[in-house]
Length: 339
Image: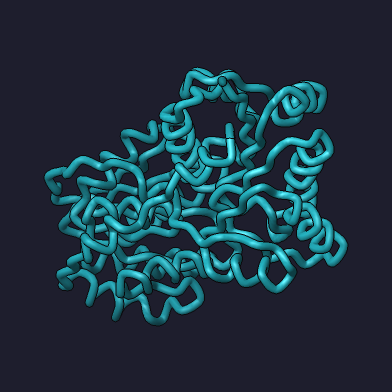
């Protein structure tokens, strides 16, 4: 019997990591024996529909969202970091509202590969844990989220990030260096200039590709970094990469000789593709992935360490544990079992 699945998440905002998660989720849902009908709640429904060949409704058209939830069998909420109020209380209230409506309409709810918290607002935290107790199945992507839920009486399983399931063909490495940046309060001009100085110092003989993976948050800082590089060394070869498809992003990262990256999923793709990686940590999740693979990392608040660490990185040989990587995959059969 065909089942109808609604998917709620940070979709349609051109965020590389979230869009890759959505792509993998849809690909695996289509493999289910029940051949589900899929509806995605997206801020850009036409683009999402064109990309993934699924039904879409605007995330903020409440009437359409309610109609879809009334007629679905299951709501999948995630992946990503939806249930937190660091970004804003509004986004947390929105995603909790979607879960509440699904529970109200007696639909099964799956919390999919999420990072939970932090939730500073006590009432919203209380509401979150109450609603999550109604979920049919919860997977979280890190131990911190698991412990937060456990300590508040919510059962969950720790899972691998679904992007580990992505099949990345082996690419011949080019003599090019990648830098991926995003806007962050602690990434000040001083820190950014220090990063540019040291990358120029050790990689001026290479072409530097600078990747904007979500223009609304990344492009401005990428352009500023590019300008700093040319101020330091007018002859350095650089290119700011923007408005490129996820496939091209993955292909390009996979072909790099070395990569210095902020975003978690950019780091994950590099590791999966066997690219030499130096994460620039702005969040504990970036440090976690570095530590999992015994990688050094730059701390955004310690620019005084950039020179020493980038010099060491430039001469290091990094070999990843391929068996560890093979074991990191999300079991989509767990979702199929509850349909």
